[in-house]
Image 1 (cartoon, one colour):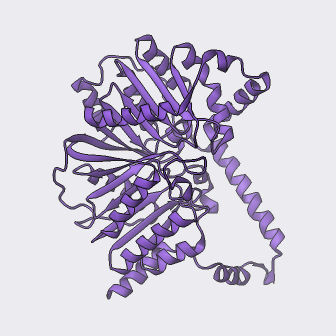
Image 2 (tube, one colour):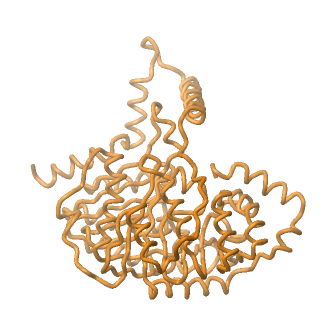
Amino acid sequence: MSRADAAGTRRAKGLRGMRPRYEINKALRRRVSIFGMPTPTGAIAAVVMAMLIASTVWGILFTRSPQAITQQIEHRYDVASPQFLRSMGVLLGPPLEPGNRVDTLVNGDQIFPAMLEAIRGAKRSVDFESYIYWKGDIGKRFADALAERARAGVKVNVLLDWAGSHKMDQDTINEIGRAGAVIVKYHRPQWYRLRHLNHRTHRKILVVDGAIGFTGGVGIADEWAGNAQDEKHWRDTHFRVEGPVVAQLQGAFNDNWTQATGEVLHGDDYFPELHRAGSSPAQMFKSSIEGGSESMQLMYLLSIAAAKSSIDISMAYFLPDEQTVAHIVKARERGVRVRVILPGDHNDSRLVRAASRAAYGRILRAGGEIYEYDPTMFHCKVLVVDGRWVSVGSTNFDSRSFRLNDEANLNVYDEQFAARQLAQFEQDLSRSRRVTLEGWQSRPIWQKAWDHTVAFFGPEL
């Protein structure tokens, strides 16, 4: 089979259901009829809506939800103990691989050029998974880079969440597909699988030639461009990875790719021999509703329970359940300093912020410090424990990340790497406003009522 034929086959697989609108409309007119007579568009819409509502209600009422963690995890060892690493590498996930280099990329001005440079330098494969991919200048740059590599014969596989990429225009999809790349929408609505509508891939993974990886919090959209210089340009952090742990990033991508397409990616194009690139032990930790969504929350709880001196959290969405709050409070009772930076007035979800405020009380009363970032939307997802253990990636401190989404975090056990994250934390802290217990308690009655009402629906936000 020629390269052109192979590209056509791959394109056909990846673009199933992605034909131009005019072709879809023609097919719809041919197929939608009752006893040979055309069915009015309004009736079709009504039937589809009724099926959607019925299937959603069925899923809510009869689909088993993941079991929430109910056990209180005691402080039996700290982060510096070998037992902590055994728990992370044996009890929960893949082992920590030594010999990695992890570079910190701050905001779009550093993040996007590094990612695009890696894509443009690809020789064999590009595997890209994202929750958000929206139309705009940044989306066009990535589409051009992916399409150019596909035309050059590189195997390009793009997995986008159906809900998160709803702002991606059809022309961009067509451009990538026509070049020979395979582009797939994750959990596209199907009438017989509507319960999956609430199960999204929130992972952000880019792997080039199986040797260079990226992960973190950034989405592919103009909101992440720039350097957080104003409210239209968001604050975020992403990470470039080299070394043996990149195989685990590739495995996390493969996990969802196989689920979405049935195709297994393997061989040297995806899993080459990897050599030592730095000094950081690291692991790629993933969770999904099919493979154990509770493991990500358990990883966070074990990290908090092992804290001896400090817990520093940068988080875009902070809706901790009672169990998570209890662990934070217990850490404070042990004398652990707890600091949390969250979005402030510039927030892409007013509902999430309201529900988040409802959880401030117990943490503030225990002596925890909460700060709200002032300049723009704060989209980071970084946990640093005792200046040694760092977890970065796609996971938020909320029930959606812990129980519904497919998530992936890079865990790094390295004091120098942790020091770099803490230095950035201090910079963000200097641009944030502290929330005091007195200020939280004195907010208006209507706001308190609103916060607690929205918090009731927190698990679905």
